[in-house]
Image 1: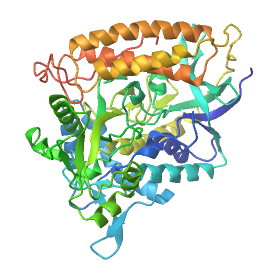
Image 2: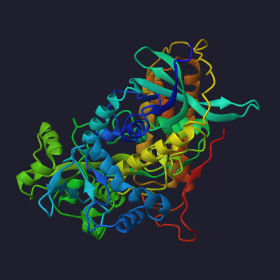
Image 3: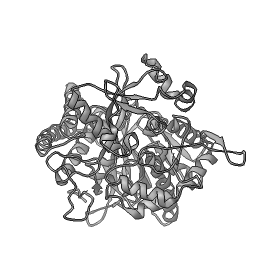
Image 4: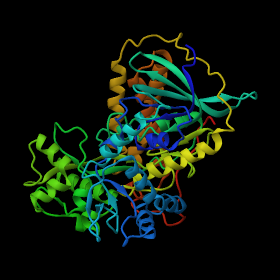
Length: 535
């Protein structure tokens, strides 16, 4: 195989972060957007709630910063928080310029202005949204704009295998010069060279048995960056969304945070409210508090689910604000205008990731990361609702600007060695992958979930060590497939989460352990940073 192509910029991932970078780069650059499914398929597409930004005159940047710092439980980087929050309005204005149709309301002068809702942890209404399908509105609009760009080549159904680093005369590894990717339809691996490579591959919540994420959220970017020599941070902080629909036929359907923001009440099976016993903000408490409260009550009562009820609001109000949730629930025979919704927590967002600066640059020259794959310091120990898309938009713009300033002096990537599959054979037992996949996600849910203990983490560590050995052997001897690549990446992510959780001997934010139920006040809070063995 020869090198397929060389680009100015290779973008791995097609959500808001990846497409945001592509659209902010000049049309004189040759750009490739590589995505392992269809272009629209991403976590962004499924985001319901909205984007947090200071747009109302009664709100302030300082208030948004303060709310974020409180939610982050002492682990946010305040410089990063302020940088991202300050650029919120400009990010929303860019989306409006691209044509995103946000929900509107009458302004004080009779003009139409964005309708703002409120979500958990926020002191003001500052969530701009497109009804209850904000991610779909953003993603489909960005896809339309990218398809109009003649300089952008779209590589769908391409699963990135590994990043490629230049080998220096000294034998050391230098800058990132592209990536190998599997064309899943043709079954062949190609090399894609680039002056700059951007990881925008999303999160890793498929490492858990129950998740709100689509199937592609398998931690590919974090795993590839780790193997390429990048540090990762705060991997122990996985956010469990409190309210996913509980129904045997509902796969990963999220009930947006905005339902609680607009007055939805969390109920026990007997109809009793309970959140005021756990937090003064009750249903509007930060997500980690709400998820842990629901988990506690489910275990205390021995029930499979609890309930979220907004049926006390007028039906027209519900239909106007939550048309997507209402329609989807009707598919399962549940009418949210008349009855409570059965809900359970599910893994929703990875607060940790590949360490970057505020230009999106990682430890490896030429390699950027933006979106859920990255760790900027914004989220700390717990992500506040609707700050995720905000981070995607701000950091994708910053990364694009940094690429533009450096691209002219960046040399063309050297020839890349072709992928060699001559020494592997076709797999004879695919069942190995499915069994390992199931085991991995189940023990992560059981041992490294909402509530942890040292013993549970030790059990998880023992199991992941065995699985990694099996998976490494399998990868080394058989032709690669998408399932194998995703399992390999999930196993790396699981190991990073377990190691990070074992290092944090306190409870803080999303990391709650029964052995250390309180925050450690003997020293200043610090991020959990893991350094890869090969740099």
